[in-house]
Length: 84
View 1 (cartoon, rainbow, N blue to C red):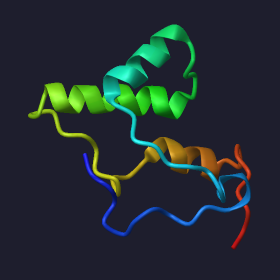
View 2 (view 1 turned 45 degrees about the vertical axis):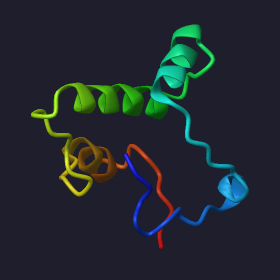
View 3 (view 1 turned 30 degrees about the vertical axis):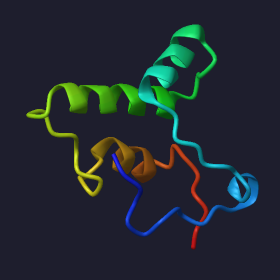
């Protein structure tokens, strides 16, 4: 794993001063097991990373792959997003 080539995205609101830390995956897993980490994106992302590293032939979805469930939710006004 590596940093994004364009660097860290610019944060805003509560993310403006959020620190960034690289934590070894075994430490993250232990924190998940203890219940110290409960963020669903972090839990799912950590497990996806483990699967990808353990099974190199199973490719992760491309970051720009279609996300049909999201389009369905947005198309049915089940979530509010600010208009640009």
